[in-house]
Amino acid sequence: MTHILVVDDKEGMREFFEIFLSKEGYQVSAAGRGEEALQLARAARFDLVISDIKMPGIGGIALLKGLRELDPQLPVIMVTAYPTIESSIEAMKLGAYDYIIKPFNNDEIRIKIAKAIEASTLRRQNLYLKEGLRDKYRFDGIVGKSPKMTSLYELMAKVSQISSTLLIEGESGTGKEMVAKAIHYNGPRAGGPFVAINCGAIPDQLLESELFGHVKGSFTGAINNKEGLFEVANQGTVFLDEVAELSLPLQVKLLRVLQDRTFRRVGGLEDIQVDVRVIAASNRSLEEAVAQGGFREDLYYRLKVIGVTVPPLRERTEDIPLLCQHFLAKFAQRANCPPPRIRKDAMKMLISYDWPGNVRELENVIERAVALEASEEITPESLPFGPGLLRRLKEEVPPRRFDFAEEEDALTTLEELEKKYIEHVLGRLSGNYTKTARSLGISLSTLKRKVRLYGLGSAHSKSTDDS
Image (cartoon, rainbow, N blue to C red; front, side):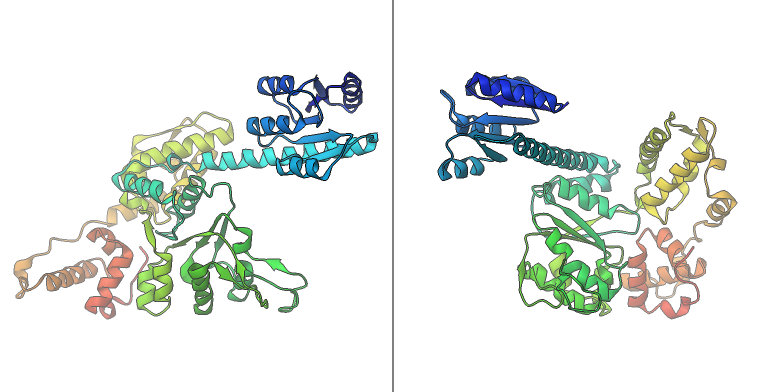
């Protein structure tokens, strides 16, 4: 039941509010002095305070200050029989929700109380949701204890406290957006909005309007003015996922936003100033995109003020058992059942798999196993890989030893040795880039860059990416 505190030095007024508000379905407490009201507010939680301004001792304005210190979200309605502009302005500046002038009618009180309580409820719900998001995206909500993840946590803790532009790089499914949210909700902008957009999921002609908004009549279908996401995210963070997919014209406009935090709506003439932090992410190497001419070099350096790399799951396999336990608990709780165990041979399979879909793929596999497994144990048969994975694991034997003695010029330069060895492994693995990169212990993007550098691509053009 909504609990209202009435504060008035006149007994008749207190009795009126007690009777009236009780009939409206509210729980009512009353105090005859400001000092008593503060004591009650310290001992109990109220949803609304209705207080007279003129009272002996602690008056209404002083009481308002004290209540705001106790609970900034608590709405206070001031009541006065002697209204002045000065007192009204002072009360509103101090955070009073509204004021009522005596004499008043019951309908006026009823409406103002209902609006105040509704506004208070919305504020508290919003605060609760923000606290929940902050809790959800704690750094320890990102699971992993491998050395690479420990280094990532340390970097996240540092960059969360500043507003520098970040570039998060990593393969699809590694959790780049979760990292961005954790940085936002653990920093000084946590009270502001976190607005995310996938730059590769929206057609180019619509993306500009989504980012920067438009004015009425700027194009067919623009029947009203529309705020862009940069306006919506003011005082918060804009997360630009798959930023490598931006067209060159949009890259120019984004560059201006990063330079001076101003932009114009589509069809608009006025510059709009915003205070936002920009976090960009890409599963493609922006450095390579710059080299290929598909991404502006000046924008790349503006985005990568600080670079954050999220490692793929295959480079932190020691985290797989921990991630499995995390997802087992999560999905078992949703299904209202105890989490099943993972048999050793099933865990071995999970660790052996290279996880091209990274953490997202592992999460989906565990969700499926929890949903479909009737027993208390997850076995290899519970996993969706089937014979295909087992065959693949058996086929992926390491290439034969590279014999330097067979090469006439083997001991020339390090570059020549690297070139010959990459060519050797590519040949042994039928030109499969993914298997070759895994065998060499380097990323796929690094392998492709070295293949281009050494001119090896033409020899292995028939079989490139997939395993």
